[in-house]
Amino acid sequence: MASGLTAKKLASEIAVTMYDFDPNATTSTAVAWVDMKDFTKFMVGVMRTVGTSTMTLILRAATTNAGANVQTIVTKTISDSPDAVGDYIFEECVAEQIAAVAASSGYALRYLACYLSFATGTDEAAVMYIRSGAKFQYDELTADYVS
Image 1 (tube, rainbow, N blue to C red):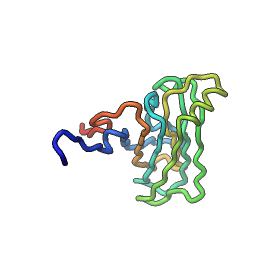
Image 2: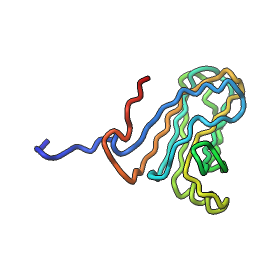
Image 3: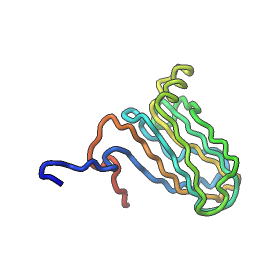
């Protein structure tokens, strides 16, 4: 690479976060709320880590990162539920879908969450959020998280 040139890195173009989802319930539960203010695309990946029961997945938007004024953006119809450890599925939405629901609901929707439910409360999953179409790109938009 020539001196003075920098390589575009994927980690500076997308924001990826991962979550261990262990709700200990059968109700639809938010995995995590993320701010979509500076992003135009969102995709969630869900991989089964424990259990075999059926699963539902809903993408919902809200006016706060605490989930106020929640509105459904996308409901994933799962014809063949990921019912074995290692099975995984994806769902996505774009800013235009969120804007359309915001316009019809009258709420300024900015935060997004994946809601999951399992038919068996002891089932678990690993969940990955990918936000892209970043308004501002910078090193380590996707960063390591080690506690």
